[in-house]
Length: 222
Image (cartoon, rainbow, N blue to C red; front, side, top):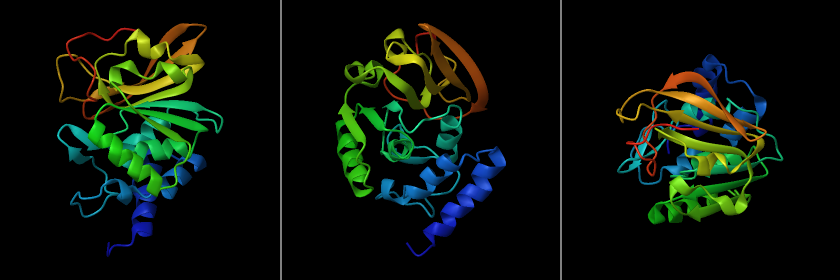
Protein backbone atom coordinates (compact mmCIF):
# COMPACT_ATOMS: atom_id res chain seq x y z
CA UNK A 1 0.00 0.00 0.00
CA UNK A 2 1.21 3.49 -0.80
CA UNK A 3 -0.10 4.94 2.46
CA UNK A 4 2.07 4.78 5.56
CA UNK A 5 0.59 2.01 7.68
CA UNK A 6 2.55 3.02 10.77
CA UNK A 7 1.05 6.50 10.59
CA UNK A 8 -2.41 4.94 10.20
CA UNK A 9 -1.86 2.91 13.36
CA UNK A 10 -0.67 5.93 15.31
CA UNK A 11 -3.67 7.95 14.10
CA UNK A 12 -5.95 5.10 15.17
CA UNK A 13 -4.55 5.24 18.69
CA UNK A 14 -4.52 9.03 18.97
CA UNK A 15 -7.75 9.75 17.09
CA UNK A 16 -9.91 6.76 18.11
CA UNK A 17 -8.59 5.00 21.19
CA UNK A 18 -7.38 7.85 23.40
CA UNK A 19 -10.59 9.98 23.06
CA UNK A 20 -12.58 6.92 24.22
CA UNK A 21 -10.39 6.46 27.29
CA UNK A 22 -8.50 3.40 26.04
CA UNK A 23 -5.07 3.88 27.56
CA UNK A 24 -3.93 0.45 28.80
CA UNK A 25 -0.38 0.04 27.47
CA UNK A 26 -0.75 -3.71 26.87
CA UNK A 27 -3.95 -3.26 24.88
CA UNK A 28 -2.49 -0.45 22.78
CA UNK A 29 0.69 -2.41 22.12
CA UNK A 30 -1.36 -5.42 21.00
CA UNK A 31 -3.19 -3.32 18.41
CA UNK A 32 0.06 -1.74 17.23
CA UNK A 33 1.70 -5.17 16.90
CA UNK A 34 -1.00 -6.85 14.80
CA UNK A 35 -1.10 -5.79 11.11
CA UNK A 36 -4.82 -5.28 10.52
CA UNK A 37 -4.19 -4.99 6.76
CA UNK A 38 -3.22 -8.69 6.72
CA UNK A 39 -6.77 -9.64 7.69
CA UNK A 40 -8.60 -7.85 4.87
CA UNK A 41 -6.95 -9.43 1.84
CA UNK A 42 -9.03 -8.91 -1.30
CA UNK A 43 -11.24 -6.28 0.33
CA UNK A 44 -11.16 -2.88 -1.36
CA UNK A 45 -10.83 -0.15 1.23
CA UNK A 46 -8.72 3.00 1.42
CA UNK A 47 -7.56 2.29 4.94
CA UNK A 48 -7.93 -0.84 7.09
CA UNK A 49 -7.55 1.42 10.13
CA UNK A 50 -10.56 3.68 9.56
CA UNK A 51 -13.22 3.77 12.29
CA UNK A 52 -15.75 1.39 10.75
CA UNK A 53 -16.61 -2.25 10.20
CA UNK A 54 -15.44 -3.96 7.00
CA UNK A 55 -17.64 -6.51 5.25
CA UNK A 56 -15.76 -9.74 4.53
CA UNK A 57 -18.57 -12.17 3.68
CA UNK A 58 -22.35 -12.00 3.60
CA UNK A 59 -23.31 -11.22 7.21
CA UNK A 60 -19.70 -11.44 8.38
CA UNK A 61 -17.66 -8.40 9.26
CA UNK A 62 -14.24 -7.39 10.47
CA UNK A 63 -15.17 -5.10 13.34
CA UNK A 64 -13.51 -1.73 13.75
CA UNK A 65 -10.43 -1.79 15.93
CA UNK A 66 -12.11 0.67 18.27
CA UNK A 67 -15.11 -1.60 18.82
CA UNK A 68 -12.85 -4.54 19.61
CA UNK A 69 -10.66 -2.43 21.92
CA UNK A 70 -13.63 -1.05 23.84
CA UNK A 71 -14.95 -4.54 24.54
CA UNK A 72 -11.54 -5.89 25.51
CA UNK A 73 -11.07 -2.94 27.88
CA UNK A 74 -14.14 -3.95 29.90
CA UNK A 75 -12.08 -6.67 31.59
CA UNK A 76 -8.49 -7.08 32.71
CA UNK A 77 -6.72 -9.75 30.68
CA UNK A 78 -3.81 -11.45 32.42
CA UNK A 79 -0.84 -12.88 30.47
CA UNK A 80 -1.77 -16.23 32.08
CA UNK A 81 -5.41 -16.17 30.92
CA UNK A 82 -6.92 -18.86 28.72
CA UNK A 83 -9.52 -17.28 26.44
CA UNK A 84 -12.37 -18.62 24.33
CA UNK A 85 -13.38 -16.47 21.37
CA UNK A 86 -16.65 -17.34 19.67
CA UNK A 87 -16.79 -16.24 16.03
CA UNK A 88 -13.22 -15.55 14.93
CA UNK A 89 -14.32 -14.41 11.41
CA UNK A 90 -10.94 -13.21 10.01
CA UNK A 91 -8.67 -13.94 12.96
CA UNK A 92 -7.86 -10.27 13.64
CA UNK A 93 -9.46 -10.13 17.09
CA UNK A 94 -7.97 -13.58 17.78
CA UNK A 95 -4.48 -12.22 17.09
CA UNK A 96 -5.11 -9.22 19.36
CA UNK A 97 -6.22 -11.50 22.20
CA UNK A 98 -3.22 -13.78 21.58
CA UNK A 99 -0.94 -10.82 22.32
CA UNK A 100 -2.62 -10.37 25.69
CA UNK A 101 -3.22 -13.92 26.95
CA UNK A 102 -1.49 -17.28 27.32
CA UNK A 103 -3.78 -19.20 24.94
CA UNK A 104 -6.76 -18.36 22.72
CA UNK A 105 -9.22 -21.03 21.59
CA UNK A 106 -11.20 -19.54 18.69
CA UNK A 107 -14.41 -21.17 17.44
CA UNK A 108 -15.54 -20.45 13.87
CA UNK A 109 -18.48 -22.25 12.29
CA UNK A 110 -17.80 -21.27 8.66
CA UNK A 111 -15.30 -23.79 7.16
CA UNK A 112 -14.25 -21.32 4.47
CA UNK A 113 -13.39 -18.70 7.06
CA UNK A 114 -11.48 -21.25 9.15
CA UNK A 115 -9.01 -21.73 6.29
CA UNK A 116 -8.41 -18.00 5.91
CA UNK A 117 -8.12 -17.54 9.68
CA UNK A 118 -5.43 -20.21 9.92
CA UNK A 119 -3.52 -18.60 7.04
CA UNK A 120 -3.86 -15.10 8.50
CA UNK A 121 -2.66 -16.18 11.93
CA UNK A 122 0.26 -18.12 10.47
CA UNK A 123 1.35 -14.97 8.64
CA UNK A 124 1.28 -12.97 11.87
CA UNK A 125 3.17 -15.51 13.98
CA UNK A 126 0.28 -16.08 16.39
CA UNK A 127 1.46 -19.44 17.73
CA UNK A 128 -0.66 -19.51 20.91
CA UNK A 129 -3.99 -19.89 19.11
CA UNK A 130 -6.14 -22.91 18.29
CA UNK A 131 -8.92 -22.66 15.69
CA UNK A 132 -11.93 -24.94 16.08
CA UNK A 133 -14.50 -25.44 13.30
CA UNK A 134 -17.74 -25.83 15.26
CA UNK A 135 -21.12 -24.19 15.85
CA UNK A 136 -20.81 -20.86 17.63
CA UNK A 137 -23.70 -21.70 19.95
CA UNK A 138 -21.74 -24.63 21.43
CA UNK A 139 -18.61 -22.78 22.47
CA UNK A 140 -15.87 -25.36 23.09
CA UNK A 141 -16.35 -27.28 26.31
CA UNK A 142 -13.39 -29.65 25.73
CA UNK A 143 -10.88 -26.98 26.77
CA UNK A 144 -13.03 -25.33 29.45
CA UNK A 145 -12.95 -23.65 31.86
CA UNK A 146 -11.90 -20.30 30.40
CA UNK A 147 -10.80 -17.18 32.23
CA UNK A 148 -12.46 -15.00 29.60
CA UNK A 149 -14.95 -15.56 26.79
CA UNK A 150 -15.39 -12.98 24.03
CA UNK A 151 -18.14 -12.76 21.42
CA UNK A 152 -17.30 -9.81 19.16
CA UNK A 153 -20.79 -9.41 17.74
CA UNK A 154 -24.37 -8.81 18.82
CA UNK A 155 -26.39 -11.64 20.33
CA UNK A 156 -29.91 -11.79 21.81
CA UNK A 157 -29.06 -14.46 24.34
CA UNK A 158 -26.25 -16.34 26.06
CA UNK A 159 -27.24 -19.87 27.02
CA UNK A 160 -26.10 -21.69 30.13
CA UNK A 161 -23.93 -24.05 28.09
CA UNK A 162 -21.68 -21.07 27.27
CA UNK A 163 -21.49 -19.52 30.76
CA UNK A 164 -20.87 -23.02 32.15
CA UNK A 165 -17.53 -22.89 30.31
CA UNK A 166 -16.32 -19.95 32.42
CA UNK A 167 -13.95 -20.54 35.31
CA UNK A 168 -14.96 -19.21 38.69
CA UNK A 169 -14.26 -15.45 38.66
CA UNK A 170 -14.25 -15.65 34.85
CA UNK A 171 -15.94 -13.09 32.59
CA UNK A 172 -17.82 -13.17 29.29
CA UNK A 173 -17.89 -10.04 27.13
CA UNK A 174 -20.35 -9.38 24.30
CA UNK A 175 -23.14 -7.06 23.09
CA UNK A 176 -26.79 -7.88 23.84
CA UNK A 177 -29.57 -6.75 21.51
CA UNK A 178 -33.36 -6.80 21.59
CA UNK A 179 -34.59 -10.17 20.35
CA UNK A 180 -36.94 -8.53 17.81
CA UNK A 181 -34.48 -6.01 16.39
CA UNK A 182 -31.53 -7.40 14.46
CA UNK A 183 -30.20 -4.11 13.04
CA UNK A 184 -30.13 -2.00 16.18
CA UNK A 185 -27.85 -0.69 18.88
CA UNK A 186 -27.16 -3.08 21.72
CA UNK A 187 -25.61 -2.89 25.16
CA UNK A 188 -22.04 -3.94 25.83
CA UNK A 189 -22.14 -6.32 28.78
CA UNK A 190 -19.90 -8.39 31.01
CA UNK A 191 -21.20 -11.59 32.60
CA UNK A 192 -19.11 -12.45 35.63
CA UNK A 193 -19.14 -15.82 37.40
CA UNK A 194 -18.73 -15.86 41.18
CA UNK A 195 -19.16 -19.15 43.04
CA UNK A 196 -21.28 -20.50 40.21
CA UNK A 197 -23.56 -17.45 40.07
CA UNK A 198 -23.63 -15.30 36.92
CA UNK A 199 -23.97 -11.54 37.39
CA UNK A 200 -24.69 -9.20 34.49
CA UNK A 201 -23.08 -5.75 34.21
CA UNK A 202 -24.14 -3.28 31.51
CA UNK A 203 -21.86 -0.64 30.02
CA UNK A 204 -22.18 1.43 26.82
CA UNK A 205 -24.48 1.30 23.79
CA UNK A 206 -22.87 0.20 20.53
CA UNK A 207 -23.86 -1.17 17.13
CA UNK A 208 -22.22 -4.45 16.15
CA UNK A 209 -23.37 -6.85 13.42
CA UNK A 210 -25.21 -9.95 14.58
CA UNK A 211 -23.03 -12.94 15.39
CA UNK A 212 -24.36 -15.96 13.43
CA UNK A 213 -25.32 -19.01 15.43
CA UNK A 214 -27.41 -17.32 18.09
CA UNK A 215 -31.19 -17.52 17.93
CA UNK A 216 -32.92 -14.15 17.59
CA UNK A 217 -36.27 -15.63 18.61
CA UNK A 218 -35.21 -16.67 22.10
CA UNK A 219 -35.03 -14.22 24.98
CA UNK A 220 -31.81 -13.60 26.86
CA UNK A 221 -31.30 -15.82 29.90
CA UNK A 222 -28.49 -16.13 32.42
